[in-house]
Structure formats: C-alpha cells, structure tokens
Length: 154
Length: 209
Image (cartoon, rainbow over the protein chains, first blue to last red):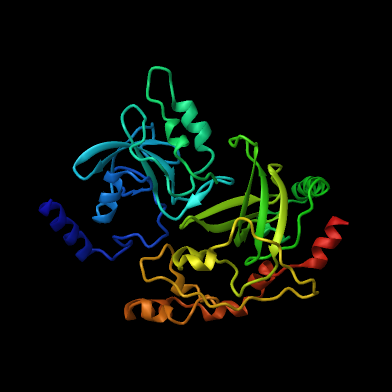
C-alpha cells in the first residue's frame, strides 16, 4: 500500500494535476456493501443500534447488480449480529411515480421473512406490495409479513 | 411551455406530433396553472393499492423538461420523513391535479428544502384549498434557514434568493473564496442564454393555434 502511495505522490509531483482525487459532483447515494441504513421499525435491536449511533451496514445485497433499491433484500451487520432486512425507502434519484425519501430506510426481518418489530413508523412505497409478493415463494421466506406491520403507504 | 433548450434538439415534425399528443391529453384532464412553490394535490391511478388509486399532497419544488416530457416534483414531510414524488404532467396515470395554494417563490427550484428543517415542507394530507382569486399570483418571500452541513448539493454557489443569510455562517472561508473565484458575473449579459430561458407566450400561442 505504502509503495503505491509513494508511486502516486511521485507521479503527481512530476506531472500537472489533471483531475482531483475527490469527487465534487452530487453523490448518487447508491446502496451497496458497507452503506449505512436507518432502521424504521420498532424492534428493540434496531432502536438500540440507532440510539447508540451505530446504524446497520449492508454486507450483502441479494440481487444481480449489487446495488440495492426499493424492495431489495439485504444482509445487515447490526450490533455484532447478522440480520436480513428489506429496503423500504431510498435516497437516490428515482424514476417517475416512485417516491424518494430523505433517508435510506430498512425493516429488519428474520430468515423466514417475519419482521422483528411490530410496527413501521414511516410511510413506505406502495410498490412494495407487488415487489414483495413476487419475491415470496411457497417454500422460501414470506416477505409479505412486512406489509402487514406498515402504517401508511405512499 | 418552453421551447427546447438547445436548437440542435429541435425538430418541427417531432414538435408537431408532441403538441398533438399534449392537446389530446389536455382534452381529458384539466391541467391548472401552478408554479414552483405552489401546493398541489394529485390523484393517481396506482394498481399497487387495493383501491387502485392514491393521492398525494405536496409542495412543488421543481418543474423540469418541456413539451410532452414536462414534469414536476412534489415534496411533503409525512411522519417526520421527507418524501418526494416526481410526476410527468402528461402521464395518463395522473387522474386529477388540484391546486391548494397558488403562489410562487423567489427561486427557480426549492431542492434546498431537503437540507432545511421539516417545518418548511410539512403539509397536512387533508389540506383544504385556499386560493384568493386575483389576477396576480402572489410571491412568497419566505427566507429558509438551512441546516448545518453536510448538504446534498452546493447551495452556497447557486445564489439562491429564498435562503436566509445565515448560510454564510455555515460555510468556511475557503468555501467562500472558492465561490468568489468560480463566479460568472458576465453571464447576465449573455442575450442568447436569457432568450432560451425566457417564457415566450407569443411563440407558443402561434405554434399551437
């Protein structure tokens, strides 16, 4: 690593700076590995993690692209545990008719799809009704239980 | 309605076909006059809901694109969570547009409300229309106080009139120097740029009729 840094500094010292080493453009808020999320259900685990200022991190996104959007299932690292979650709100730019929220929200679930909490305290997109129904199979997890604890749809 | 921003994108046949589609859509739905800063209620056809429709109330924070692709963004804070929906004006899924409060703001967009306290963009979902029927659209000269950094965009470089002067205390001296260095004071003398941004009512009327 240090060799690489020395090399980089040597190159930058002898050539004029053509581009900067940091981005100055608007971030696209992608949800990928090591992104932080906000737990929006009333589970004890989620509440404690948010109060301690240690929100969960994505350690796997279960889709082909590796970039999570509304309705994707993710594996989170939360307070030293591995818990699955459903993304129910994203900050990134969205297509027409899909709501965009001010925070990246997640609802924690067990491996069988049962949510840890009993209530979701923020509105969730109504497109989740269709997405989660499609992801549910007879032998796999039942993700539609997340919909039954929602309070409001947008 | 604006003409295309770049002359190379303009095409008379495309514009004629688009105008035909727009007028056909306007015969089904009445699209009222509204501006950035107006509060709207939209009824949407939403097949994900059990009742197949949904409605949303929010402040119009942005109007972008032109012609058939014209779109607007509504923002509201529901249960302490800021929610935004971008909608296309000529989308057939749009059932009804109702203006609850007709007014304008000082800025071309209000995206900075994402980094402002939630009270600036909170509207009840059962809001009643309150419009005073006068010829002139009132201008809301409210000054919004932004939250401290980090921000989603560089608001200090945009010369926004609707943002409070306290934004100067939120940025560093280095940022101020950088902003002064990157200023382009000669752009206000660019006549062609002004022409492309101005609303040409006469042009649009002669083209439609």
